[in-house]
Image 1 (cartoon, helix red, strand yellow):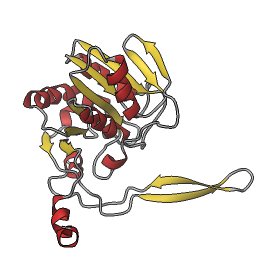
Image 2: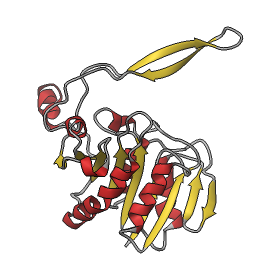
Image 3: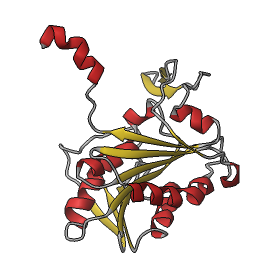
Length: 250
């Protein structure tokens, strides 16, 4: 089996090294194509106005000055063109990608692009607490889950989102098949500051208010120290919405 891996934290991110070790336990060949720098929050963006700079870091390791989506396209359509991957893995992200995070995440986008191109694709994220990233949790449990998912097969247009809880491997309370959750309060705020000349500038800042995780959601699973497995689909059409607007546009 050949595996193509990427991430959104950059070519030197520790989570990418974790994912490479996971992939090597499953595959004969692993190719790494990752962004040159941190691309967190870029979602499913493409570099259309700038050229893609490709740098060979070492054998089967490449850095792209671009987004995770760019990296997957470069990997499939250039680097592995003659020997395409059997599986695409994106991550391991430092931090959860659950609920609204899914819409912003470059990690999820890497798997989305793989799915769009017709390849089985999985996104992996590791929750953390304080300074402890708990990489050993993902490393201990990911390979077995990936094997089960691949053996079962992927429905057309579906990728899988894995989130590992912020705990040591032996404290994981099981695996939950989940739906995408939703937080109850606003997460983002604008934080204003001033530079040395007194001119204003702004950061997008994140708050982590308390909320009740919905039953059966990815939020609930990771809060209970369970691994969350969430199938995500590329088709964003809302079927109830079609019925809702049918009397107006039907």
